Length: 446
Image (cartoon, rainbow, N blue to C red; front, side):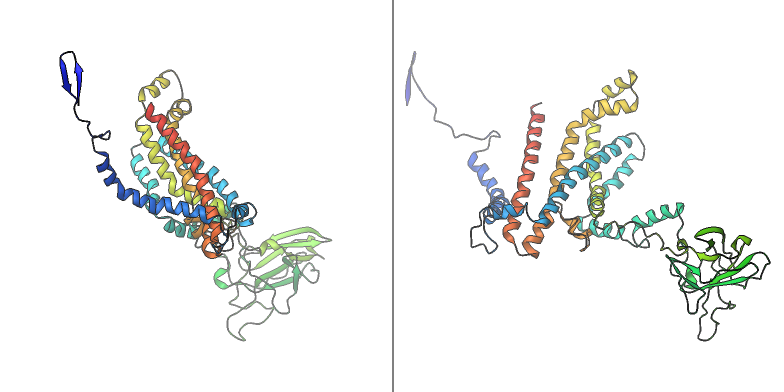
């Protein structure tokens, strides 16, 4: 093909095959992308499409159910609890993890051991969700001897309010005492110059206070009421005598004794190491009472995995894992921050709090939003921690949408509702993903 020109005709070069931006022919690029596209379609597109279609059918998969499965999302108590818990997760977990990451990154920026600290904080990221769930199931164990959370809590509590040394003490046979509102009281009034016996049983020898000594019979004292409170039990059949202080029996050291007249405490004392005690003449004609505080069960800590605390407890384990992730990303943002602005603010008289609030945080806003959005997407599909940590008795209270999807689909045999939950989760994640994509595009344009 030729075209006319001022100097004659000139040949037109043949049309070239179009290439991609990188210079690669599109057919070649398509061939290289084909395996990835096939995997993407098989592992992502097809499951999503199948779940959408399946969500409109009944449990057998044969009958069209319309939007009935979606109506169940807002009428089923379990799903509503899961949705409420997911809202709690989305609000608190990313916020706290991001805040802790920011604090750790800023505080360790200038210290010599900051790298070692960051390594320790980031280490939980190397642990799987399953392993972390098992770890925190032990951490939150109710028994302070096993669970470190309750061990610390009980230790702090007992620092300010000591527990009783005799929680298992109770009345023996032919006892001069009777039960009284969690404690015990003498059946008859006592008199000055009288030595009173207050025997109890039920405390194991190895559970007696360290200050407990061999009990002795209290001597009488005119004008005063004396007595002995002791563990009336001797190992071996027929060795000890009931109601009498035997040589191997120990006194209830530290037990509180009150003298009560007309419902009022007129005198009180504490039992010595050998079990003896002395009350003044005010106790003449009174009943002796062993208050319930002597026998209260020791403080056993909080029920971390109970219905009221199980969700915050699991969120705590999630933060333990992901605060390191937030810290590393924020620390990278801090490393690229222009130092001239910080130094200029300090030269102008700003203190460190003002520099942090007015300079550091605004400059880190893009990084903070990336971390927060990433964690929000992550918590929407949290499953492992809830499934492992929450015991069966509290799993309904700790339920989240991903766990409810598993329960409906596999444990309860309701794949239609499970598919509807999956689609609903996808719809919740899409806006967050779109926000993240738009933000990234704005950053690229800048």
